[in-house]
Image 1 (cartoon, rainbow, N blue to C red):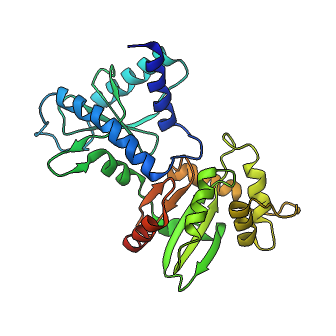
Image 2 (image 1 turned 90 degrees about the vertical axis):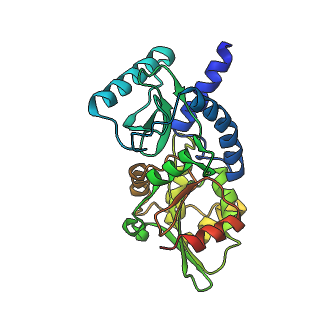
Amino acid sequence: MKKTYIYQCIASLMMLLNLSACGNTNTKSNDAASAASAASATSAASAASSTNENTAVNTPVDAEISKKISQNLTERMRKAFGDNEINIQKVNHTPIKGLYEAVVGSNKVVYTDENGKYLLVGNILDIDNKVSLTEKRVAELSKIDFSQLPLDKAIKVKRGDGKRILAVFSDPDCPYCKKLEQELAKLDNVTIYTFIMPIPSLHPDAQKKAVQIWCQPKPDIAWNDWMLKGKMPPTVKDCTNPIADVMALGVKLGFDGTPTLAFPSGKTISGLVPKEALDVELDKNQK
């Protein structure tokens, strides 16, 4: 295997585990990437031997095995790729004998063997049931308690009867967030709470813009003018604002990119979602 290919793979892994530019790309691209990685995941699953029928899926492994896998994988990653480490929170069983699920950060899933020699980034597919076990697992890990969101720290916009509720975590300098705003503008009968969550490591000016937008007399209009028209409002004096609190909240919730959408059911979606899909998700995930 060529060295350049190895480093392309690890670069892709680091983008998964760390902040990537504005978070995920559009949903269609994510599906295509998942399908591509699913092929390799399915092959690896076949090679990993028979189904582990005696162990419940997603149940934690015992403490000794968890420690062994975490240490082995971390040490191998450090040795092979220097400072690039992964923060393993949990190690669980999978349906495949010898293959373990490692939960990285708060809601990322990768797979490895007991010795931490092999690392699989991709989907495990349940062919008979036509479902991605990986996507299902990530959805479980990403679920939040919507009722605990501090809605007073968000920009509120109501359209029509406003019955459908949606929260969006967005970076003012994220291009995918701006594309999402174009889709959100097409929605009706919805109340949208926008939490301005700049990611300074990706967009150095975003936090300053976020504060300026929040401190405007009409922050909802200022937000739309910037995100949809590229027009920043006149400079005003900084005011008491929730931007730092929202950034901390995003970290707490495991939102490592923008845009991230949250629904009253607790479901979250990271990335650009078209209007038609938004309508479906809004209707399905109000409670």
